[in-house]
Amino acid sequence: MTVPFIPFAEGEAPLDWIELTEALAEGHKLPLAGIGDTFLYRGEDTILSRAAAIDGMGVLVKTATAFPGNPALGKPVVNGAVSLLSDKTGELEALIDFHLLTKWKTAGDSLLAARRLARPDAQTILIVGAGTVGRSLREAYGAAFPEARFAVWNRSPAGAEAFAADYPNTQAATDLEAAVRQADIVTSATMATEPLIKGDWLQPGQHIDLIGAYRPDLREADDAALLKSRVFVDSRETTLHHIGELKIPLDQGVITEDHVLADYYDLASGAFTRELDDITLFKNGGGAHLDLMTARYILSKFA
Image (tube, rainbow, N blue to C red):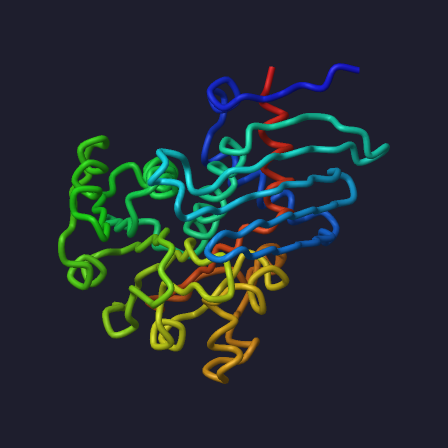
C-alpha cells in the first residue's frame, strides 16, 4: 500500500478557512477524543508529542519541537512530524507536512472561536506578534472578516512594518495599549513569559484570542484580563492545568475552573457563545484532537 505524503503547497491549494471551521465544529459532534500528551523540556527548548483518537475518525500522532534559538540559524522555531492512522486498523493512512497541518489547525482553531464569540460586524482586528502564526491569522481572519481593517504590533517595529507591507488594508501599530483599546478583535501569538495584554485596556464588546502560550511558564494576558472577561477554551483537558495562561491563575487562586464557561464540546448546547457587549476571551490550546480533525479535512481535499 502506498501511503500519500501531503506536501505544503499542494496540500494547501484546495483548503478554505471557513470550510475548516465547519469541519472542526462537526468533529466535536463525535465521541469525546482520547488525548495523550508528553512534554520534554531542555532549557528553553520544548519537545511535545501529542496523540489523539476519535471513534469514527481515526488516530493521529504529532511530534513538535519548539526551539526559540532557531531564528538565529535562519530556521523556524517550530518543527515536527505528523502521522494519520486508520480508525479501523491503525494502519498509516497519510503523512502530512507538519507546517501545513500546524498552520491550518492553529489559525482555524482560533477562527472557529472568533466566528462564535466575536461580533460579526468587527471592523478592527489587531494581531500581536508578526511571526509565522501571525501571518496565518491574517489569512484566516481576513477570510471571515473581509471588510475589517488590520493592525499588527510586534516587539520589533521593523517586523511589524515588514508584515504590514505584505498584506492589503494592514498597518503597523507602535503603541500596543492604544491598539488594543481600539480593536474589536485582538489575536495574540507571541512567546511572552510575562503578560503583554492588560485587562485595564479591554473594552466592552471585544474578543480576545490568545494563542502563543503553550507551556506552563508562558502567559500573554494578565489576571485582570481573565477576571474582566467571559473565558472560553478549545479543550478544558489540554489547557486548564497545562498552559500558564490558565494554570498560573488557577494555581494562585485568582480564578477557579468554573471561570472557564465552555469548550468546543459545548458548541451543540449553545454555551459557547457571546452575550451582548461582554468581553470574550478564548485560549487556543491546540490539542491533538484538533490536529486529527484538521488532518482529516486536509486529506479529504487532497486529490
